[in-house]
Image (cartoon, rainbow, N blue to C red; front, side, top):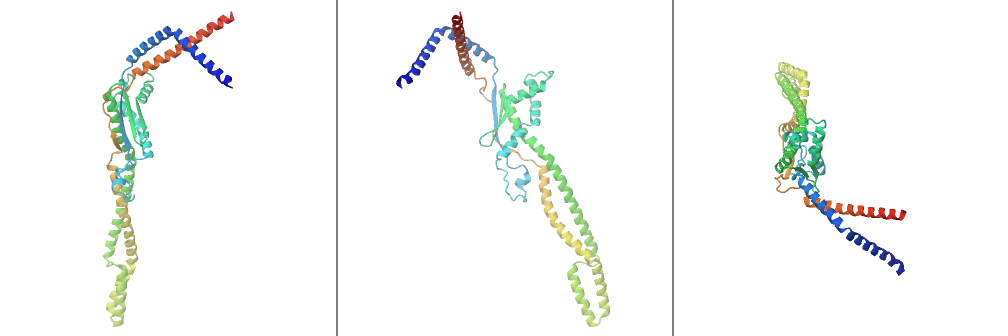
Length: 343
């Protein structure tokens, strides 16, 4: 049992010694090639332009409209204008930040076609431009449901300016998207509100016309006139009874119209009160805007480069060259052994 377990250990130790001997044997070649790789990679890394990273961190809001947050009674006051958005709002924010409109505005504002040294006469200029844009500008969600805008550029000030501009454009683009609906919604509510006002005014004018016939309160007037008519009949005062009968006839002729108009007017005035609240909310949403984000950190001009990390490039290149050289020598050595055995 002991013999069987120690045999692999002896083989492993032998292999390690052979490998160390192999390294020692080829140490000069390995050192020279590794040094050459280090020098070349250092030179190449110096040719890579410095790039600077600027970031903006912001939270989405939970409220999209002014009325819902400030003046709406419909929502029961549950909306808080200062409340941060959650996962859904963060995903919506990312979608808008990745929109074509924001990308187009940033490209135009900073003349990125020229800034990225893209040939304007190239057949695939926009493909190259968008690829460069996407490689230098990215958006991500943090673990705390904030959204991070990251911009990498060879000019530190432009990196910060682009990041801050994108944050500002988020408000503009989102408000514009919402304006398209809120203005249409306001026009619909305004039309309904004005139609209801006109209908109420017509009914009030009609009631005013009926009042010229002495109709002011149908139920109480009918009750009093009937009592008066019966009283005058009881007294035998037929002349007075005839006058009251004429009034009752007038009341009977226009009374039903009066009651219908009065009841409809009362109902429509209640509707107008509710519609006025909706009208005011829709008007505020159509005319006013509120910020759609909370900016935690604005982008500052970075003082230190983010890329390239030259020492890391040199280390990785040197070690990679070392291992490739070792493998190459092993293959060559084995090939020579194979040829000797074959011959």
